[in-house]
Amino acid sequence: MAVTQGELDSFHRFATKRLRKSEEELTIDDLVIEWDSMRNREHINAAIREGLADIDAGRTRPADHVTEELRRKHDIST
Image 1 (tube, helix red, strand yellow):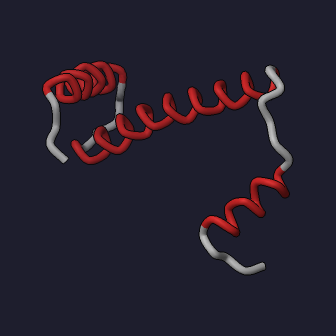
Image 2 (cartoon, one colour):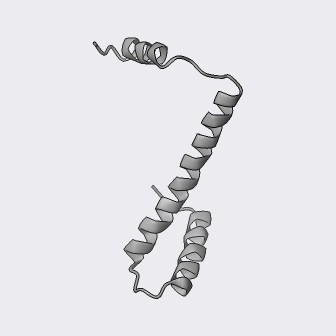
Image 3 (cartoon, one colour):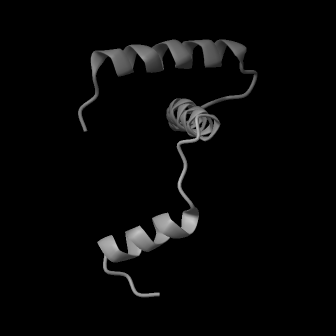
């Protein structure tokens, strides 16, 4: 996947701040892994917030109904 200028700028800002704060020696790989984790964490937290809002609004279905629907859709036996 090609990198965008926005992603490169975001990584540069992150890496610069992280290196200024750190007393330990970090590799570029360390920085990339930490940056990617941070970005994924934001997406995960957003998905959790969305799920909690769905629960609060009553937009839920029983798990056994969803499981059965997925089994039928993907032809999975029990």
